[in-house]
Structures are given as structure tokens and as C-alpha cells.
Length: 265
Image (cartoon, rainbow, N blue to C red; front, side):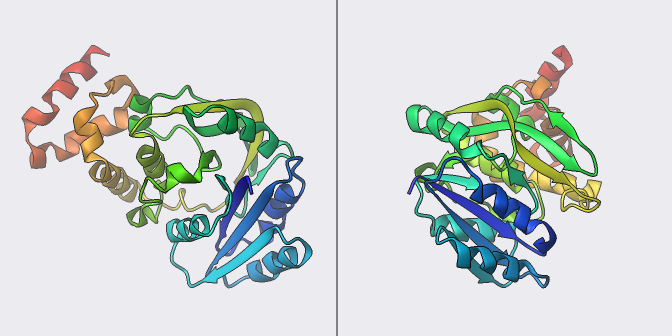
């Protein structure tokens, strides 16, 4: 088994068939798809089971509502594939997605993550250009979506998706864990991932105060990384703000060099 597609879903039955159809239609056929129902009370289970009955490559897990982090971790733990792709239950991938992504990871051992250009659809429609990767940039903001491919063996070197990030930004937190020890990120220039924009989303529902708290949690989760890598502040404005908010706790001396360098940019 080459690729395991991990699809957590919570009350996304309205869109789940589109996500699963996009997996079924892949031109690359050596995959399995693990659907984790995270305590949905809509028709998600019926939709998922209809695919399990038709195609043995689909597998289904039902759990009480515990959040997307636990759902993804559980799905990846049972995955048989060498490579992992997370896909949310309301998004979808183009039919050549796996065919485009797989060879890059398979042929280049130095590459840890393969991502792609993103197409937003639904309430709005636009293409989001990719951003060149560096760890310093990633320390300042998330650079790519969770529907990016990585090796299971690299996942197992991390602690998985951090459960203290269940309300948002868990993908950013995970990428820091995955890439803090090094590794390249390659972006397939094709626009082959489709991210649905709805009236409601988990990220939109986060208040500014809570978003700030999540950013600080990322800092706490990766404090060792921020203490060892002197990142370029022009890529890290959000963490400059975090630095200021932590100043009264950690002391002015710690962040004085960051303030000084930030003024240079």
C-alpha cells in the first residue's frame, strides 16, 4: 500500500460524498481511504458506509466527538500506506492529485512534505499562490494546507497532531513539529487541491482573543525551536506580537534582539 488518505468528518455529510468521489476518481490507484466519523449527528455515517460497501479500499471508524486532532491521529495510526494525505470531509482533490504528489516523495528522500497550489471554491472562487518554504517563514505563519503529503515514518517521529490545538491552527503546529529537524518542502505548481469556503468554518468562528491564545500555545509548544533559531522578523510579524505579549513574563532581555532586528526591516 503506497498512500493512505485520512478523512476526519464531523457533521459534513452534505459534502462528504464529493470528498470521497474525488478519492475514488484518482488516476493513481494504490491507495486506501480511512474515514473517521468524529461523533457526527447528521448523515455522515450513511454516506461513509455506502463507499465502504462499494470499494474495499475504504475503511470506516466511528468515535465519540473528540476533535479533529484525535481523529487524524487515530486514522494515521491504523494507516497501512507508506505516505499519508489528510483531507477534510468538505474539501476535495483533483483526479491527478496523488499521481502528481507521489513521485516527488518517492524519488526525493530529502523532501518531507509535498504540497500544492490551492483553489478556494464555494462562497468565493480564487487561486491561492504558493509560498516558498523556509523554516523561518513557517515559524511566523502557516505556509501550506493540511492536505499535503508526507511519510508515515516522519509522522511517527513527532507526537502527531497536538490535542491542545483542537480548536484551530493544529496544522501549523504539526508542520513545525514535522519540519523542525530539517527537510525540504516541495510545492506542485498545479492547482489540484480544492478548499471549500462556507458561511461557517472552524477558523472563522475563532475570536481574535482566542486566536491570539492559540498563537501563544504554538509558541509554548515549540519554545525550544524559537530559542535555537534566530528567525528573520520580517517573516514573523505574528511572533513579534507574541514576543511583546510575553515580555512581561519572560523579561525584556530575551526579546530585545528581536525588537532591534525588526526595526531594521
